[in-house]
Image (cartoon, rainbow, N blue to C red; front, top):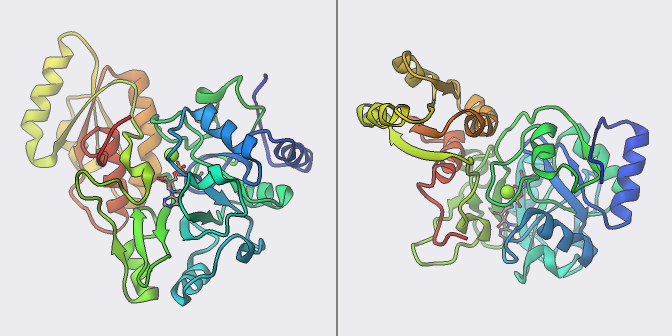
Length: 336
Ligand code: TXA
Ligand code: MG
């Protein structure tokens, strides 16, 4: 199968709609990362997504809908705080988990009685979802465990010959996946940190918890159990206080391979004599650059050495979570 990277013009949107209607899989731009979309009502189409990615069968998918889609048919009610959050943050990088009505394929939620819904703000995603006019189940458009894609080319690198169409919307401005928020309890609870932060949610709702799986416990957001976002080269990880150790690690790799640091600008400035990929300074900039630099690092280096950013609050909580998991420091309770 030929994989076409196309713009979001009328003709290509008509083809995307036709493909989704026929149970095919279409990749599309969102403001966070690219998604691998399929008709959420179709068991076959949803299973195709799992097969293409090599995704474990117990890791549920997010359903994507356009801004005018009536989600009340998909969920069994919502608390008042959830309606307020939708008004404030949607369309945008916030996924909301609700009690499910079981209307979409059972494979979307993998046996959970909840459904995750997202209304992306990217004009490409909106145009695609409007054209499809169906709930579209879509994980990030990367092979399972690999780094999430933030350009159409990244999607092509993982799925060339396996999917018919990639709707190109350029580089993703957000750069890390949406915040996943459990809206089934009295107080909203973040299951995956992202660009909509705990602080931003608490401003609307008064209170917001962040879920942390205890060791040995299966996490509420099953995806958090897996090693993820991993570049295909050796990795090492140090804090900014351990820079001497990090340099020793670099120098020992240099004897036989090609090491490279991945760090924020302020740390890059201290490592002038070494190869380093610069994440930038502001948290939003680091989020936007992280995945592209992880993919660049795996192409160019035999050992990628991550240096932990010093700021850890707000948007940096999400960046830190992805960095630690990419470098294998923290990946929940089990690894598959
Ligand atoms: O930004 C994003 O969310 C991107 C774009 C494409 O929209 N999508 C994405 O999907 O990151 P994926 O499949 O790579 O990650 C979905 C996460 C997983 O950790 C999964 O376990 C969790 O959301 N999830 C999905 N449905 C859930 C549910 N019903 N309850 C709890 N967690 C859920
Ligand atoms: Mg993913």
